[in-house]
Length: 596
Image (cartoon, rainbow, N blue to C red):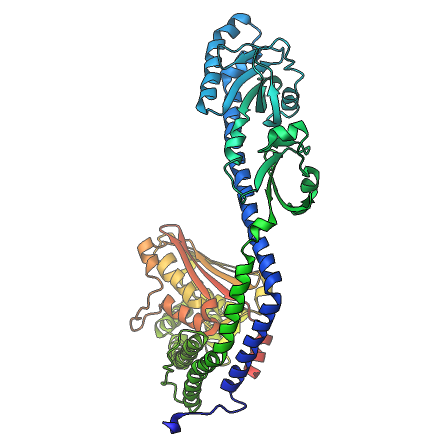
């Protein structure tokens, strides 16, 4: 047993963790004892303030939600064509005809919610129509001069929300309300009256009085002018026997402040509504919020003592739990360093060491895959080069060309013989080339043009071709003999099978950091089914001059990787377009890469 016990070395990780963890625990304990009271008090106060602020915002949101409902109701009534006609109609008989229907609309709106005190329409000439048939206008009420009327006319399209006030518009009734008013716009775009919706003041009581902020805390509402709208001790406020520091609270940028009133500290937390301009203020007493701080301080001390007693044992366990998996992982790394890529780490851990194990195993697997991919890529490149060498001189095409030369020679067409022979020589020269597999686009275009000259002389008026090459694209590098297969396919599968022949257009341009090369024909085109299989790998028949698009795509991927794109677009009887979208590589970069 004694032989299995390892004593930690002075410079080992386990010793470092043990000492560091012990020192950390002792430091935390001392700091906790020294700062416990202050931190606990601040934390409790912040939590209490956050909770109070959350309640205040919730009350504010409830009020806004209800006021938004009233605004929507106002918008519905104002937008009713009957209401507009009633207020703007000068003909008394027509107006009286619409009166009952409009009054029914107002009455239905007033009956939707019990908190709505009254709904009325006031025309620009002072006429008042109430939703309740039993209500009549107070002759002493100056509705046209009231603030709610003037503010509504001053801001057409908006709902004006007033502060709490005594409504005297209805004869014999004087009640505290909050008013919503909105201008009614006539056909000419000018206001023809104002809609008035009075909300019972008691509704604020129902919302605010249910919120408890400790045994003594409370809420109150203030308008944008600093006047108290609602207070649980409203009577004392209006009698002047109680006051609140509304101005200071509204001026506080963060919405939180404390005041000492008669030797007692009070916490004010405010939340302003952008919709109404009102401010909901929560008042709490810090002594109530911090009444449990003594118990929390004692808990800190007890936890600190327990931590000191268990620090050494926990440090030893943690150091061993960390270093043992690392030791096993190190052994696996040594095996990989010796060249064994089949080994995998079997460390069992769900923490960072476990993730390190997974990353290490993934790295080994990726290294294996990368090595295999390199071998596969080199093999594919060699196969592609072999296919390229096979395709460079195509016997079937060469025989047809030579037969054409012999026929033209017998016919005495010496100039055409010279032209076709020169084109064939240039074609063979470009096919064999200088041994490079990647060449400037200019050379590839020259090779394709030689090929087209020969095909043009063979098919005569059946085949036409156009070249539109941006000079800036000529030095861009592409693999040798990738355009000829595209042109060849365009001739044999597009132009040749079309009775009237057609035209092949070859274009090249730069698009930001990409090279775009297109081969277009107006031949027979392809069906969607044919187009779907154009990229499939195909076996060429012996003597065939056709090269599969799959081989072209493979060669592009060998040189450019996944950054190379070959796309085909085609419609039956409209033609086919092959588009190469390649990264721009220039001769200098290629030379640098070769040198490197």
